[in-house]
Length: 268
Ligand code: 2F8
Ligand code: CA
Image 1 (cartoon, rainbow, N blue to C red):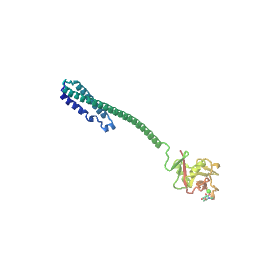
Image 2: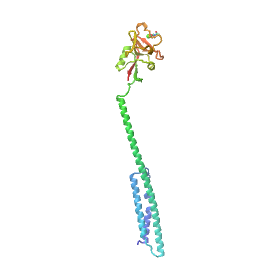
Image 3: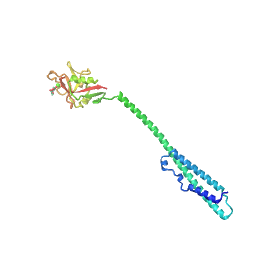
Image 4: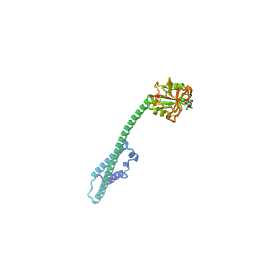
């Protein structure tokens, strides 16, 4: 049988365990970012509480109260203290269990968030790789045009920044794998007029006809001579310039020796 004096000591030491509840307090840093260490800490606290609970129950079972009315009262008081300890211990246990569940939930949530972010990163990485390879392909062999060349309807066009006679102009274009521009319709004529330059085009006199540099004969329905042109002034005008770029009827015949800007065209 345990003496009431010892009981009081045992009870006070047990109650001091429950007094402030500090041993159960979870650091806010752990709650914000729960880790397996935080869960382990909770499990330890819960195990301690369970052990304490069992100890109190065992101590209470071992109390055997004497018949003396005075000591009986003291003994019952100790029993009350132990019972209150049990109640406090039980409620702290449930609170610790609830905190552990909440922490576990946070760990689960964070893990699933992590998994989803890893999957998202992998998908983005894949996208980056695809774009990189597309860029590389485009840079290596895709449709990229040299600086100064402008794309229009399947061709690229270049307007010179210096001037030269007609054959020298044509040679420049040929050296670039292009030729002087061949104007096939009104849209293309309007496009080249948009360069706002008096410039050589790929049209020249061939016998009595006008011929494009691609070998085709000028069609009267697709010609844009300026009024009163071609006039073959002084009987020496055998090449064509786009002269009046502000108007649809913009062409003029000129001697090949005239120094002009020029327009190259290259099919792409
Ligand atoms: O330089 C030749 C050029 O001279 C004139 O234009 C300034 C002629 N224009 C007219 O006669 C209306 C062009 O036909 C000629 O090519
Ligand atoms: Ca003329």
